[in-house]
Structures are given as C-alpha cells and as structure tokens.
Length: 322
Ligand code: DGY
Image 1 (cartoon, rainbow, N blue to C red):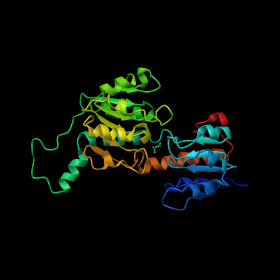
Image 2 (cartoon, protein in one colour):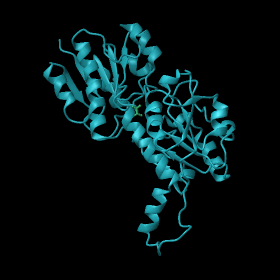
Image 3 (cartoon, rainbow, N blue to C red):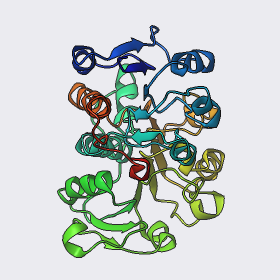
Image 4 (cartoon, helix red, strand yellow):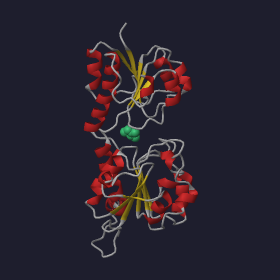
C-alpha cells in the first residue's frame, strides 16, 4: 500500500509534486484557511504522514486519532505546536525545517528594528495622510543604532544571522541563551545573564524557541528591567512575551516601542497594541519569502520522501524513535 500523506494547508508549488511522483497518496486540505480541528482529525485518521503547519495543535488527542501515523513533518523550524513527548511515546517521528529560514528571518528582524527605531511606518502614514508640510528639523526623529547595544535573546541560527547583519550597523552585541558559545561561534556577541541583557539592551530582539522554560520569560517583572528608552522586538513566538504586561509597559512609558512579528493568540492582536504609533506589527512573516517558503516545503517533503524510502527523516527532532 502506498504512503498516505495529509497536508494540512496548501504549500508553494513544486515540492508536493515530487511526493506524488514518488507514489505517495497526497491529500491536501482544500481551503485557503487553516484546517479546523475536525478537519485535522479527519485528515490524519488514515494518514501515514502529516505535513503540519505551526498553527496545527499536534497533541495527544490528534496523535491518538492517527493510528497509522509515522511522521509529523512540521512546516516550520519551531515545533512547539507538536507534543513531541507524546509523539515519541507513540513511535512517531517529528521533523522541522531548520537552516533555510535563518537568513530570511534575520532580514525581517532588521527590517522591523529599522522600521521601529526610524519610525518608518509612522512616517509612511504621516505622508499618506497629507500631513507633511515640508522639511523640518524635528520631524519624526528616530533613534540611531550606531554605538547602541543590541541584546539578542537566543543566539541560535537565527540569532547569529541577526548578529552578523547587525554588526554592519555598528552596534555592540550582547546575548543570552542556554549555551555560552565559543567566541568563534558567537558573531562578536558577548554572553551575559538574562537580567543584565535586559538592563543593558537599547534594542532587545527575541529568537529563542518556545518551551516550558521560555513561556512568558518576558513577564511584567523582567519587562521592568528594560530601560524606558529601550525597544523590544519579538521574532520568536508570541507566548515568550507576556503580551498584556508588554502593553502595560508601553502605556506606562516604561519602554520606547516594540516590533512584533508574533503574538500570544495569533491571529488575535492585543487591542492595546493596535492604535500605538510606537509599535510595529507584522503577521508572522519572518520566513515569508517565495524562496524560503519553497525551501521549507522542500525540506518537509524530503522528510516524507525519506520515510517512503525507509530512511531516517533527515531533520528529525526526536531521533530516539528511529
Ligand atoms: C518557524 O518556522 O518556526 C516560523 O515561525 C515560521 O516560518
């Protein structure tokens, strides 16, 4: 019997054809919206592999509803939407899409940092509203990056790609994370404890995975350690930052601004963020280029092709099941 693959959302064209050509029975969720829970449960019922999205909760209930499942190929580098412990206990491999999105996400990070510190979104709205009456010495002044301190929370692949780019802007680089890297691997960034990172950063940029240690890592207490002149940028997962506490900090003037690519309850955005000119909002676009989204689809598909070929899925995150 051929391998049955359920794809929970259509992907950029190309990679899925390779799966079909290899003889897999590919069924793609037919709507241009995330699969509902019922659709997901129905989709996996007969599937050997699930090509999932970061918005799909691949939890104990879903895994139990998929007795044939051998692989969850998650279309993202983050896999906090998958209960890996339960998958492992059921002998289901889980794969992600590392590497191909680091540079792209770093580009977007720099875009948001610059948009925030140089008030690009505000300036655009100002011109479009017909409010511009001519050059003025004090119009929409921003904050320069040269000589400032960029604090990187999580110096993994993406954090390092951010550091490489940020160096060209003349910033001093500090980072914190689980691993203190050797100088040759830290892109010129110096490790400091989290509290010190928060106290010293002019711009704090977040790139750590979401897990039990990082959920609400930036809570009200830690947000208070940031200086009132500091900016916060979240490119990781919304739940790393306590969104209501962030809104409170902004409202109280305890933070200069924030750029958010991710939110606690996507696609909901805290109403306190919406009207603020000192906040830049993006709908989870870190990896959103044609090239990268296609490369991510290719890796996800390659993992399924590996399964089909009886090989270990190449970017398996729970290799103990193999
Ligand atoms: C990921 O891959 O985890 C990003 O959030 C989306 O590309």
